[in-house]
Amino acid sequence: MNIFLSDKNFLRRMRIKNIIKKVLSEKNYKWNKLITSTNLRQLIEQISLSSTRNIYFISVDLENGEDLKLIEQIHAFDKQGSLVLFVTHEEKLEVLYQHKLEVLDYLVQGAQEEEYREKIASIYDFCFTRWCAGVEK
Image (cartoon, rainbow, N blue to C red; front, side, top):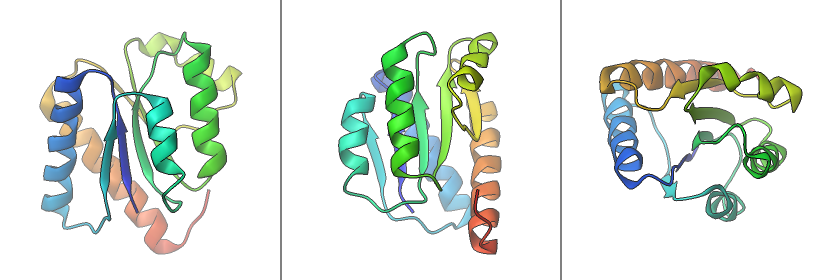
């Protein structure tokens, strides 16, 4: 399993990367690589070199049709992967249903570090439990 993180904001990307590493270390979960990118196109290039069943942390503008199309491409490549979105406005999440995008969870940009840590830890617990049990989407 690889972990992909895409966010154009350098400081937020590094903050989330450090939280992910800390959570994985605390939980003692096995993972291959943590791959970061500044945009979704760059992320898609990296995904093509990867296996499936990955976890994707993606900062996305839900009002940007291009972002939504790129998320569809990620899901098409890795149907067993888990998408977690960083969004600015929770009330815009309904667009995911309109585009029939399957997302495991979301985090609101600007949340406190402890909130990120707790949510990221629960996401990993869920994914590892599901994958270790052999349960597919």
